[in-house]
Image (cartoon, rainbow, N blue to C red; front, side, top):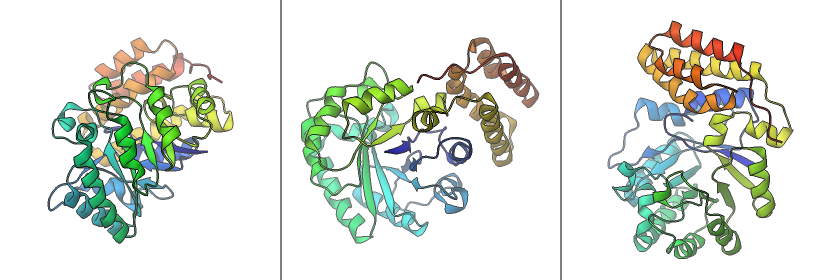
Length: 318
């Protein structure tokens, strides 16, 4: 079995993934939040930190690229190669309106024929560069009617793997995942298949693993941010440890203070993390509100300490 960390903008950056890798069950791959490919692409300092070997030591990091232009993708691929990367991932899953309105992310799925021509161009270029290539996809934009066609298109290419989040774009993250669509992929496609979507608990993982016994790769997103110990519970049967959670938090907080310096920006990042992480604690709502209202480090640290001191982690779902 293999476990992957999903790319989540503003959350699973190099600071988060390094802290996670230190304190919890290591992932087989860590996918970066998407990097937009543009004409004459030049990496920003932030993007360099995300993909640089120096800031990701000991981690297998896969840059995820967002674009609908083949030449822009290949130019960005060559930049990634210069930083030592041998594998890339194409974002065909982002449901954000600002992304899909430009025909990117899951918005690209509404034009299967154009997508096919795009993939044909980039696959040749990727192979010439000696690199591998995977796709993270949803099952459609506004409906599922093109899913079988999309699977036929994906099947034509020697993908490293196909990561499937079985929702359409307009679902965003609401409603149940459409497991019949993943079943269709499992029955028809021959490239390695990775399941992604609503893996919040050990029992949820087991349900998917039992329903799709041939699937050996799993990607965790919101469930892992809420409970960073999730894969440790799944793979090692470990109980959640509040001391480890505190060390994990403190590492991220320290690293953001060192990187960003500015109090407002640091607190914004930490509050974003707590919008998920608070879900791992009993009776956390009033503490989460105090954390959200904190305007200074002292207020923030006091609120976090109160939560850790006065509340317990929810019991393992095993």
